[in-house]
Image (cartoon, rainbow, N blue to C red; front, side, top):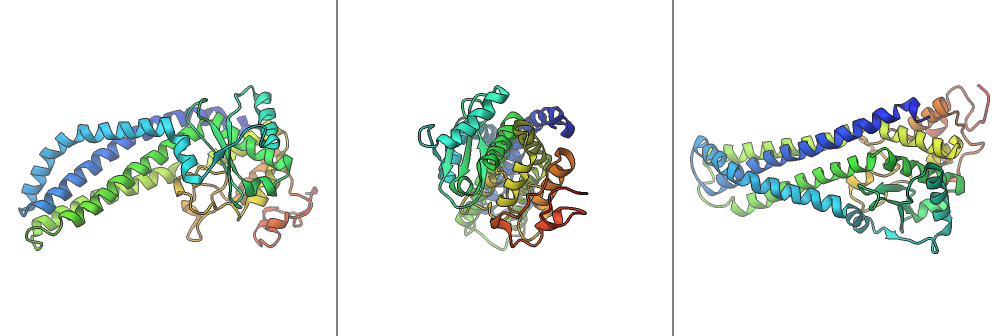
Length: 345
């Protein structure tokens, strides 16, 4: 099942993407360092644009090693403490085998079947139905699930979700997403510096100077472009990772129906309020905004279920789960079948 989706090609591409994203991080850091230098110099000095630009360019090369060092420290902190930071941001609390034997038994059985070390488990006290994996190595890997998910899913469905997150770990999707979150964090930090610095230094001198105004504008444009590229990197992460994780869950559990049933229950109930968008991108489902699905980091539940039906022989349950009984779009997922029917062409 995994090979049908190009599993090993996906893992290799994830390694290459990880290195590319790390390189992109330092390119973006260089861009925002110059933008900040230009904006601060323009705010302090009343001079023609070309003089401000020349002065900022010379200063930029002095600041760049410092900026790269700070970015490297940020990456190091992110790699070392990403699980702790994510747990802090989501309120996830690590649990033990004794406190949650059901969850541990399901995960341990899956890991034994694949010969994988058992990741840590954490619980998020939240009624949303969601789960995600975090960490960049075996010592850090952790799977976090919400209490809402544990209450709404039966054992087979919960096992499918855990298998989905294990596949993200196996495929190195988690490391790639951690790097993407680190990039977003750096750009947000620099953007805040630019905004705060503009207000702090913007009042001195002749505010009508065309040179200063143009320099500030150029700095802001560079900063916005860097922010846009950071967002583009986040959205460019292949949606195929979710199809592959669904396929990996089926490979582990041999139960495509459970994966379909779990996705149906999760649909429309996945949003964890107060959790940063970068972490939501790591979840099994990130409900798309009403604006447009084109910018969603996840394929729709409809498409994921259609893929499971087409490639894994999965079937829609006999009756719709109560959580989604009133959702009008989901019965349309079963092409050329009666709604919620099992079997038949």
